[in-house]
Length: 233
Ligand code: URA
Image 1 (tube, rainbow, N blue to C red):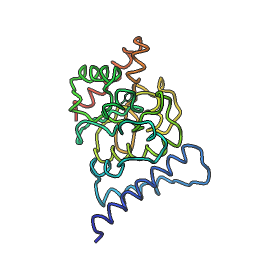
Image 2 (cartoon, rainbow, N blue to C red; image 1 turned 180 degrees about the horizontal axis):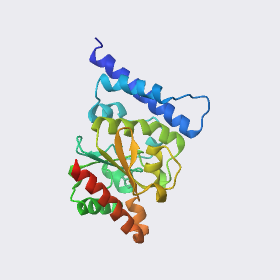
Image 3 (spheres, rainbow, N blue to C red; image 1 turned 135 degrees about the vertical axis):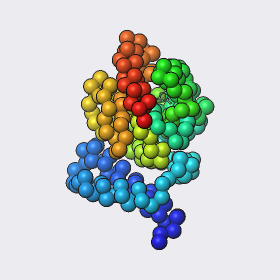
């Protein structure tokens, strides 16, 4: 019988190992043989021991200094909403307002996201909202490889802890990072893609919609598909 602390660290090690190896493979590092059987074995190990909670993950994140983004941040933006949500929305990373408040999607793009949710009869409290990157990059530049490599395991663990039925990936960066693809968002959006045993629907990022209002119809169509699937659960 493994005690709780030991099995927890086993869970963390196998989960992190899986995520890290998969990510390195995606970046093009050679010499990794990640057969689907090996990945399944790692999944079984962690799945059976301890189910991590969001609080445990937040505690592990702590006052994170795993990458250089801690330098300029005011707050780590971990995530917000229902820890048992059936729908998790994943964005790119905190902007100015989110960094100040420590809460995801509270700026202009966030206000639009709230309206998009309302359009499909959901509130922010019904869902869980987080980002791939937990700290604001300087001047909102794109996150760099090492920053993604440090942060990605945390959103993956958050998703595993919540065990939602659906993920909505907001924008290119979230969709491509979670699906480990370089396919453009214009081709990924509007269809469900498998993410572990969850259905992941990519759509355009609300900040992109603010700049390109003509894409609102596409997002409306995408989220209606999500609503239909969500209401069947
Ligand atoms: N854009 C994002 O991707 N995430 C936020 O939290 C805010 C803006």
